[in-house]
Image 1: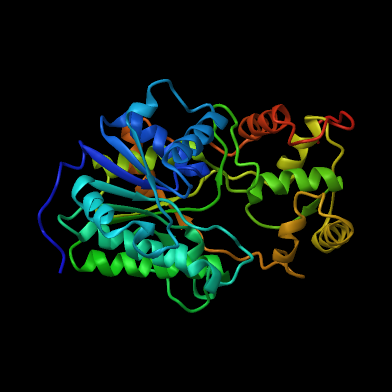
Image 2 (image 1 turned 45 degrees about the horizontal axis):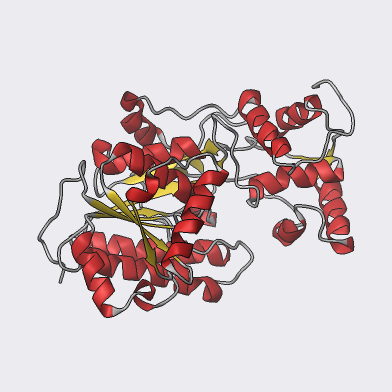
Length: 382
């Protein structure tokens, strides 16, 4: 039975719990929550000690230039583990958090596109169930669940247009353990919503770097794809709409604004850049940055990557090599995110286009961090 007693107003929470604050999107959500509210921000972190929790939070924000002096006065570290029962909290701490916080941003989880469902279920599905229990204990607290548009990449949706108001995705055809675990988490959240718990679901597609600073998650697929192709000196030639790039600063700010009142507290919100970059333009931008990069048909490129991965793990795409099938299906859902974009546009939050300016900003950050090798030769953009 969900307790119907409510806490502080949505727009002015006194205390907010966030999971995943030591991740990429989590760093930006934490920064935006600190800037947009006066609330204390309780951060669930897996660490051995409370000082280590705060150190991990601080180091993560500093790595993207987001830490500010004085942040520690409003950040409350909380030792826990999404994969453990009750978030790894003892009974008294769980009850105290249920009484303390006014809203929960559930952004944490285990991300591994190669792992089976069984190895991800505890953190991604079990962790979500525990968050929903905490949200419905003592008094109800709105939950803001970060999921993925990947749950709609199923056979029955490949030629459909998916909108925020579209029916929830089906279990059939969920691809890979990660999407399966996120689908289960969504179903738990939607069931709680149906019982009266305010639950908003935020589904990003590919989240890329900060549009202002270029700050990227250098371990994610997008960054690895850029570096891996540069290392090979080869990129695939593919049909389709090209690369979606939804900058992390846009996604984070939009989520926080929607959560604090711009969106329905039981809404579904989608994030995908409507202005994509073609592979040809991406390659031309890398060439203009000084990288010798040819294009080949997909099969030739895949073989080159597999050969490189078989010889060593030096190529940034080596760990992702098993994800590339022999043949690419160019079909994919058409995602219409206009309702989400329309809700935050009046607040001045607009998704930057995926163009050369954005990619050059990312390349500059990657070079600054030594992630990309020095250019081998200069070549004008084609």
